[in-house]
Length: 549
Image (cartoon, rainbow, N blue to C red; front, side, top):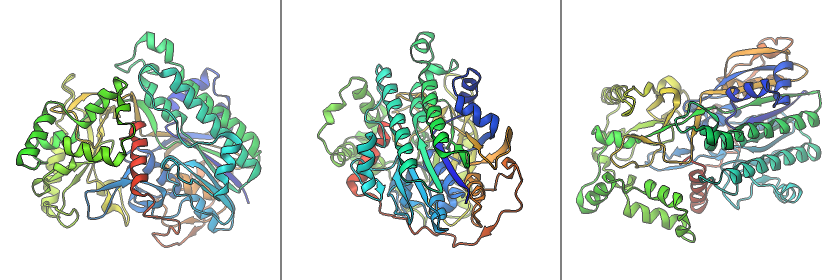
């Protein structure tokens, strides 16, 4: 049976890779391009790690696997919980491979927590794993990896301005830990299918894009001279890992390298809930506490602004020892929050990281007021029409390229959990958190430590005995990865998959792939209750430190 090694590089883009190949700095990537197949890989809407990796691993759009963001909406609720592999509603690649009696190994892939025992193989969970949680199956593998290479899942420090060298050192050290762990697993537990992820590009580009991209408004030649090589160094770390893994896998193994999304500059924040409130689509409760919170909010006294200020002053330690639950309770009492929304008068609200808007629909939300049908369509269109008029106050330019409606993007049993509107910001340079922040501002400066953000153009490379050398791919989509991997392994492709086999990459173009029919929502490994309350707060804190919340 042909073997496949699938390597996921979080946030990798040819916009960085190709210039570095030309400069001779990425020999493994250069080999993959010259001797294999390569092309851009279109991400999901929105281009965010959880739905993108979930679509990559299932071959399905989010309407079938149920993951739309770092947080997933609970049914008949305004509550959102951290997304995890336990919430994916259908089989991922390693489950499919295992179901066919083959061995499968997964290491550090997002959307694999809680780790599920496989009949033959292992799972080492990724990004969404809570601190101090058991993260491997079999369980004894965790101690083995920690003993062999000091294994850890995520960075053990968080970037602050002025600590650039310490941050890149931590990013490169973590990438090397993951390289060593992957090599150890390949040697000690060889599998028919192995899937490993490296997050160094995403880490470096979020923090250091303004030092690399001369078109970024925060770019300076002086900073670029000091820190501009940090992003290339992160890619070089991945290149070393790919080279070593290719050597360890051998020439009879097909290597597939992908990313969940691309990267580019991120310049301004859009306070989307402020815009909804200003337009009359969102209302807050009355009463003295509500009015006081709103007045403070208008003056810029928000939880987000206060925490940013404490961070810049290095005073966040004031909250050391305060439980996350207590901190959340204090903030909700002092600052304007979702608890203060008057749902009986609110038509729409924003949640999510890129620009997702949900209507407050009667029969879907607990206190929905927008009737399904004609009223829903009218309110949604009115919001879209107003969004298309939104202009940057500095340049005067329109900032919304397009507003997608849910039925144009998603189809499947879980499409009802999707946002009603997904915004394409101009150049994807703008971003919007779901917090109530910004005070009076609707569009304001990027106050976070992030200067790089996600783009739609990920990467796809394939190399091996069945791959036509020098092939260039056009029009590949992230849902095409899973069916293509199954075809490479000569396994049937489930009929539910939305993706196609990228037949153009094969030296001998295959006939129509063998299909198999399986139930539409099959994931025996799913765990809808993956997190305790404390775990949930810990994961939120990690995502906040990484700039995702």
